[in-house]
Length: 109
Image 1 (tube, one colour):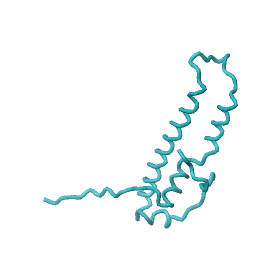
Image 2 (cartoon, helix red, strand yellow):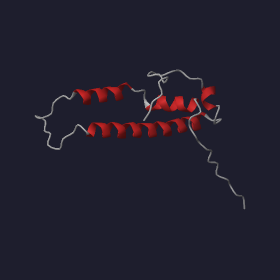
Image 3 (spheres, helix red, strand yellow):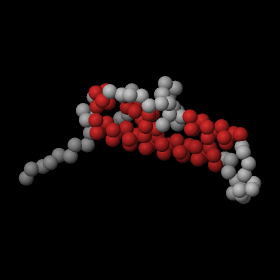
Image 4 (spheres, helix red, strand yellow):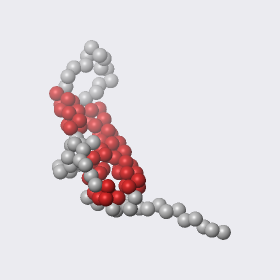
């Protein structure tokens, strides 16, 4: 997964007006951002597990485990990435997320 360079690693105070402008409802906005954050988290976890699987050996025991410099660097890289919620919020504010309203219609009989 490619992370944009301009995403801050720390939390940033946001105006509610900026967040609810696209949807008109802050709760819908939070729901959209949360769902995207879950997707990002799953993608990052899958990617990290795939990279770390290259270093695992089925015969490893506690006595045989040793420090692997490459494995440590990969783990540190993922630890330094911005949190999925921050990434999702930036994507939302940059209009990079596609979402649609799901308005159920009530049919009066």
